[in-house]
Image (cartoon, rainbow, N blue to C red; front, top):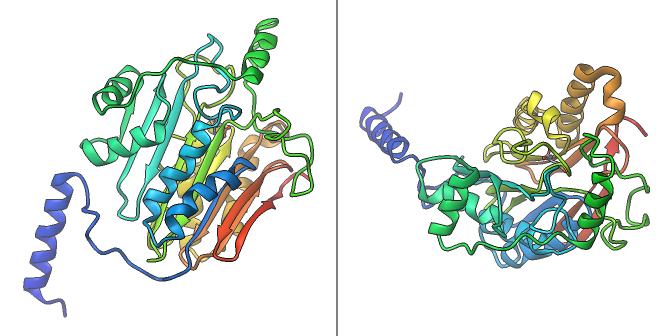
Length: 341
Ligand code: ASP
């Protein structure tokens, strides 16, 4: 029987927490696995991002800090299509989306944010300093400036400028998606190294030494998208979802189709039903394929997930998606299985 006084106290605590809009970081979270931190993130750039995350995880730090620091590495990279040098929208502006979520189901996101170098950190401030989950456009930018983030100049990378100039010749509305045509896996040529990077997103999920989970996702969205378009990355439950009792998932690829199936949330719910991370990702991908029919042949979506036991898995529509993993045992780039081979 539940002790009535305890019950009332915990109800009062929960209501107060809900009223405050946030759960305190000091509140203890369920802990199932201790001592084996790990981090996974999307695409080849994940290797470098994981190293940044490991600086925190490897010292026993919190997963939330690790996933912020990890993807900031990618946001800072001049040659990568995530930060300010990324592919612009069809009007020539780089617009950025990001989200972050911690072990207490606290979450924050920004979307359609311009001229701010680290959208993921602004998303974290939204989570920690406002009663809201999501800020967009000029409001998100004003909030970032008020929080001390400098307003930067947009500076397209050489490859983004070249691609945009090329695109302007026809201005055909065909947003670029994450289909990699050059093979995959550790032996395949890295698009990043070749300066031909066309992946517009990094998603990262991690488990810390306390067994707590967090995730982050940051993107410039599809290259040459319509002005104002948002994808899945800033939408909690689509591009990112964390449930500290079950697991965490992030997505990359055609955001519209991730949103359609509430992708990352779906994967976590499938893991709740007992599926392994890979089987859960596969099931969510199959759902998209059923919806899209033949059109699935020309899109890419990939999910990457981690469960509370520290098992990881991924699945994609197209061949070519790989993810990076870092554990106490070292780091690795792993090619994901896919529906089309
Ligand atoms: N999912 C991102 C979006 O649709 C794009 C990507 O993953 O490259 O905005």
